Image 1 (cartoon, rainbow, N blue to C red):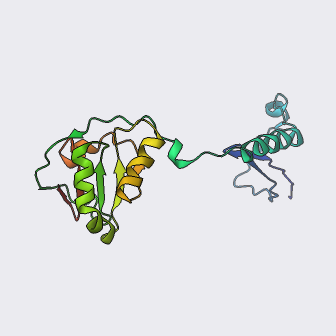
Image 2: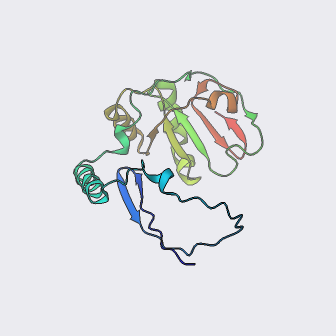
Length: 179
């Protein structure tokens, strides 16, 4: 027995929808003779107007296409539990930051001096630069310009528990935190 069933599912991801139609042959696993028509279960099911939904999604997509969000606009103001201070070299738990060197600085004299002194080394090891405790992208860009390195302002929530310090500047490399 072959029945055709159309399944129309609207999936949205960032208000972009996809409509798909599937056709399948009904496979009976067990027939007890107590078959009941599905009409009574489906009589209150509302089938959406897919054309209307697709038009709404298309309208939203066009509106989103007209907007741009810079990565540097996200994450401000960035205030963390980290403060300038002394970081004693120590090893962190295996598996954290084993492959990608990462350094954290702020917009303070100690950080700027440390980053300026270590700038070439940080570039040579392809370290990812993070800046914390900055209020806006202009502040981040000013530090980038002063140092000649790219920085990402990001939330450091929870990092203190992983690395065992709340002070910066520091470099994490090969499982070690050092200043």
